[in-house]
Amino acid sequence: MTRQKFIQDTFEQIFSHKSEQVAHAPGRVNLIGDHTDYNDGFVLPVAINFGTDVAASKRNDRIIRVYAHDCGQETIEFSLDDITFDPNNMWGNYVKGTIKVLQESDTAFFKGLSGANIAISGNVPQGAGLSSSASLEIAILNIMVKLYDLSLDGVTAAKLGQSAENNFVGCNCGIMDQLISAMGKQGSAMLLDCQDFSFEDALIPDDISLFIVNSNVKRGLVDSEYNLRREQCEAVAKHFGSTTLREVSLAQLNKARAELDPVLFQRAHHVLTENERTVNALDALNRNDMPRLSQLMADSHTSLRDDFAVSTVKVDALVEIMQEVVGSQGGVRMTGGGFGGCVVAAVKSDLVKQLSDAVNSKYPKVSGLTPDIYICAPSQGAFRA
Ligand code: GLA
Image (cartoon, rainbow, N blue to C red; front, side):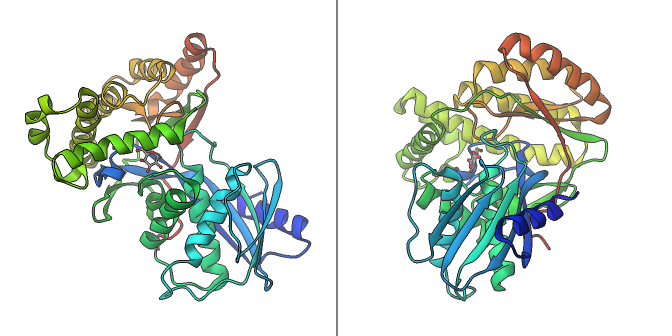
């Protein structure tokens, strides 16, 4: 059964009538460029064939009733006139926040909502750094666009999703996850300039596989550590009289090293070097230059580990196990926000079997954890024509 049929059937079972619309939004994996988006820098993510599916029908009583199949089969209900944060129901907060920012958004495209029944099912592993939350936000916006015939473009949808997280959920994330979920292109990665939201698609060569491993290291303190990293970056930008690190050059940073707190220097050093690596990685990908991509992704991991301090010992061990197999025939690094979660490899497809065997046999021994492996296909974003 397709996932679309599954969510339609589930909707009918729960609400006892047929759904009017279905929508989908993908999760993502980031090939390189982490913790650069909220510094107005560059990122190179890919939308993946894991995502969130939604079926819905309109209501006229200003009630939103939502069933989440993969979050304990829970149902929540709220009024469009009273949308409040519930500390005991996180998935619900993403839905509520998204609908709240949509309601409060520019009236140019927004004609008002009158309520909805919604059923949700997703297969993006949660808390793994593959953006299950952004995929949920973009799927909710996509279904509202279809139900209410709104003219919402993908970049605006991404900004609304980000605003739901920043202003309702309380995570000061950047724009990357929502933008790639909305605007990714099938078969491609996207170099996104987070300063002006311009992007360029980069075809992923046919002989390259996206091999993703969930370390299953449980992520703790994620939002507070994430927000702290962002504050540290902003503090360095402020030191230079700028609002973001994008306006600061690496030469300027190095020159001012003695004036800066050593930890703040490291944080900014990661961001500025990562921007360079990300732009160079696009070039490497376009040329199918695996040795170069390999070096750039390895340097990115080292920088996230040492300068930005968002990796963990077990994730580092997993990266090493994978790098041993991949060598210069592909890149390997932690991906996403960090503090656990996934490792991504972009590798020659004929290495996949050997890589799986190495991960399955070696990682449990060093970590005491069982890895989950996903071979992903680069997929289309929800709002991409
Ligand atoms: C999370 C955030 C993104 C980005 C990454 C790190 O996924 O949601 O905005 O900052 O972390 O690159």
